[in-house]
Image (cartoon, rainbow, N blue to C red; front, side, top):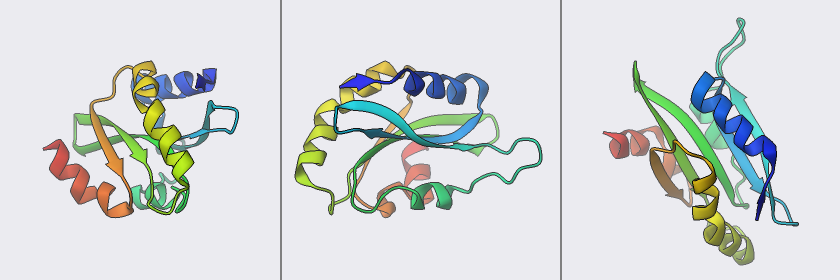
Length: 133
């Protein structure tokens, strides 16, 4: 597994500058991890993407890694790692994501909470709130 430079840089933007609300990473067929998409926080009068839009942007039948910057109480921010592995994903992809997860997380210093999700109920706002509190 090779981490593209953008992966770390985008994570640092989220962590230090709070530019993004979330980042979704994908492992390409050549085993390179890339930033598939990121969701900005509200800036310059733009509408901020909702949590539901982030959750619904995860593919229904493919694995992904995701980072979510969430704040339920002002000033109490958590950076969450989500290992997205839906039951409909191909077994080979599930194995690749599972076997590279720890190495990927080590590259991104500052993750505070980890979730393994097979469907959206595993990462609902209520499930995240229960886990964080």
